[in-house]
Image (cartoon, rainbow, N blue to C red):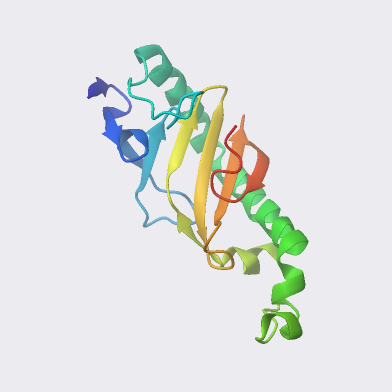
Length: 165
């Protein structure tokens, strides 16, 4: 365990190193989301055992503070990009009762689609001004959704663990 002026206690956790500080996203204001700092696995696929350096923690702080300052715009972009992913991969199934065996969902807007995102699992702050946000997704509980943000721009959306390079 190490202490940081912004993050508080930083210690080994179930998915790498987590901060004492949590995050409450704008679209899930009652949620207290755990924040993980750095990668969970090294280049060989082994769990990272050494905590982030003080310099890395300071850089993660800058990335996180910039993210929070622009979070409203970032989340609007997430909402839209997740909807585009739905249209590309899932709408043909969920909007066709012959394929789904259920009445069509009638999801016609990004905000209507956002109702199927059930919550954020964690926030992972990485180097290179990058944040990864995996989410529970009612329309694909097996894969979920994961968003990769770099410099407050959504650069990739996939299933959980698919956007992490």
